[in-house]
Image (cartoon, rainbow, N blue to C red; front, side, top):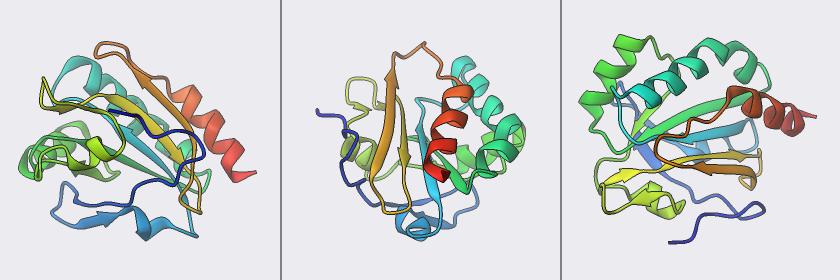
Length: 155
């Protein structure tokens, strides 16, 4: 499986968020950069730590004319309870069915575990991937990296 490269056109998608609303990458084209954050599982330690860091930094991140979208292969009702419990106000998208289809398109689906790997893609207003990072299962990503890349995209 090949991970989407910097300079590639980001694969479009339409997924349900924690409220059952459809969110599409195309919704933001021409308007906002998108920080697309894949994570393995809701309600787990590293994932919850990362999502709460994003929650706490959201004014800075979205203040850079960007939209944060988090994606896991958990079902939409799970995403709803998770987002409510952790106070996540950004879209938490369900890539549950067809299982892992969007994670596969971005090259971050772990078929053995049936989950997304930890991958983040910064996508510009034209829908082109400008930055990416993929880490190990227990390796958290850092919000400071997100801030820096979104500042570059908004310049």
